[in-house]
Length: 280
Image (cartoon, rainbow, N blue to C red; front, side):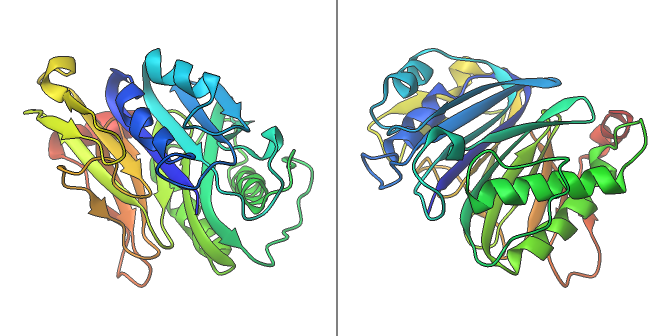
């Protein structure tokens, strides 16, 4: 099973520490050796790095571990191929444009019999179920939101959760999706999240003999959300998603969640953040 990672924060931050732990799973402590990638969002655009090699020992991965690229939103993926050949075109995250913003997407799981009709708005470059799912989701969002004004996460969240549930009937569908403003996440089987905020402690990686004093790199107003298929650190309170749960995170805060068969969608924002989030 592939490994997912994401960061959402209120100030630009680096992921060199987290990627050191994640990339070790790409052929060293794990068997996910069929490619990897990262997408660093900077407002409407993102810097996108993909490689078909092993994340644990490729030259590009070593560069990304050593050279901090700061961003408010980061998605990362290390691949264990279940569908599609090992090639660059099948490496996540996949990136497409919609409503004048770059959207990035990565998936872990295996979809059986998922062959939706794609109209040409978005077409896969590679041959994975993951990229087909991403193209279909964007195609459906484009159909439902036809206006010139881009919808906010408040409008998008329930639609993305609905689309996720429609795809998930075909198999395991854990995914991360972002336009640089909001992070949308869905778990069929395994996904965890963690919030870091003041006072910051020291984090110890699971897959590497390395610790980081987070108080040195972060100020009292900084906050961040990390997501990972399996916890990256061994001494922090990672929270597992429920089966079928969808969540949205904005600027290092959990702002929305939905669990199938629950009585209603839930918005979970701090009171002082409501006006700012709606204005955004």
